[in-house]
Length: 211
Image (cartoon, rainbow, N blue to C red; front, side):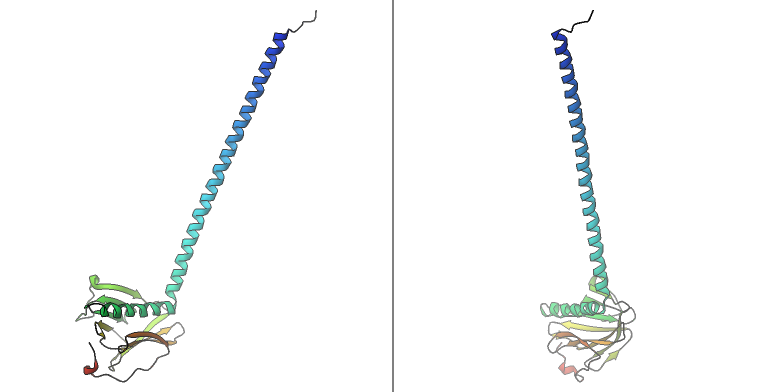
């Protein structure tokens, strides 16, 4: 005898099928959301990593360009000119004295406050600026406008409220052994960079020194 399904049984089966389909759909949606969320985190992390890498590359480029600039002849000499201008300006605006000491042995220079009786004595607390020259910028000699000349040891340009004690020139060679002169003019208090080993005005007497 063939069994006959009653209406309640059909309804119960349909309800179960609907529940199963609903659960399956919810599971699929949940998995899809989780997958999308994982993809979103991955994309965000990738963007962050790229930004960090780009930042490091930028910093490396800035440091490299800064180092290359610092090692160029023009940049080093311009730093010396700026340092001497700063010394003259600071002295003119105050009652303090400053000196720029040129060191041929160490191939460097320093700006320090005060006028030292012995320039070979280095007082760290008095140093304001100190820079070394690289291989492509070499100190050759210093000549003052009173006729004094030196190419070894130390030489000092001293600035007071009235200006430079002595003018003169600092001669340097670039990597091609071409001479350049940093000229200190104590009459107009201007420091200039000029190509070549330029000549100076005649020697000055002590009475002409406005210091």
